[in-house]
Image 1: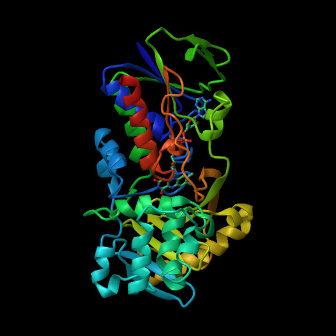
Image 2: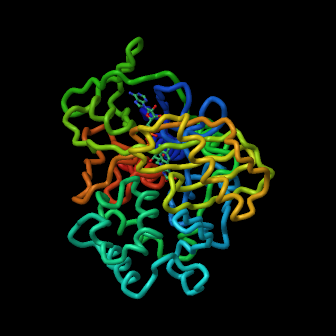
Length: 404
Ligand SMILES: Cc1cc2nc3c(=O)[nH]c(=O)nc-3n(C[C@H](O)[C@H](O)[C@H](O)COP(=O)(O)OP(=O)(O)OC[C@H]3O[C@@H](n4cnc5c(N)ncnc54)[C@H](O)[C@@H]3O)c2cc1C
């Protein structure tokens, strides 16, 4: 009985490890020469983009525990998130959790009773609408807290982002430690992908790189064979498949599938600028830079829902973002040199980073569209936006569905 997992992103890795842990023979087929998908290390060791996890991401953190990678994820700003607002050049700290707002020094801009109530209302599922419209009466709180949260969590501009999807995130932020923010100290390669592959192989799994599934051969509601072009694999009566490919690829392989049609880009700028440490994470308002991650190996800037940034040339993006982040680094006393001249910068534009999460019910695709095929992938989570947490949950749910 062999379990074929197609796609070695986070969802596929989580499914493969869960199936191997259950004692199944597992083969992971990945089209690219490396695993990780949209959460991968590039050949030079930098990440495709900064990835952060919150304490509320129980499935993702549990997966890191399982693969022995948890110690590589550090909490850069335990005393509140540093934020530089370029509108008035004010530097302050914000608690991500409303419980932290008891301390006046950690309150977000524009916080008032009415704004808090509007935020609480967002957490209650109801008639869906755009977050921007729901927060229209509280522009300052929206600008200083809700909008950056929406862009980070939903990768969708507030004016088109689903209030119900944001609500699903907010409901998870209530628990103790839920808003602690973690990043991979040494990057996604050593912090996630390599340990996941090692754990899979230690549990008996096999990985095939450069193995792009061309076609699913189906008959009678079952997958009969996997066609990889040069080689095809016939499935035995008890063999099964986890399809953990991105939505557009899952639809190519299963044309009747309903998948998200619109995606949003995330742009990351990686500066070759080593710093002495420790790891720092700074938010920016009214800026091109949304988040600045400072690690000993270099400095990275994230621009989510980055439609405009994705259209801009690297030659102008690099110096523009450096001028902003340099001001933030100096304002918060980040260790290291911060010259006026921008260091060499690599720009990574992930054009289909995640689906856009517009108002309306999520797709909720069937976990088992065929008797021996389960779907996984960030886009298949019925509740959460497309994130590492959704990917891990989906992979584990797909494994569970097949094991049942
Ligand atoms: C720049 C960026 C920043 C992000 N930041 C965050 C963050 O801070 N926090 C967070 O939680 N999430 C973040 N995300 C979202 C997160 O990366 C994704 O939700 C997650 O990685 C998706 O994983 P997945 O396994 O569902 O899909 P994918 O990562 O797309 O994996 C699919 C895999 O399938 C492979 N594949 C495709 N077609 C085939 C085929 N025919 N045969 C075999 N293999 C195939 C692909 O090569 C890929 O490896 C970010 C995403 C990006 C792009």
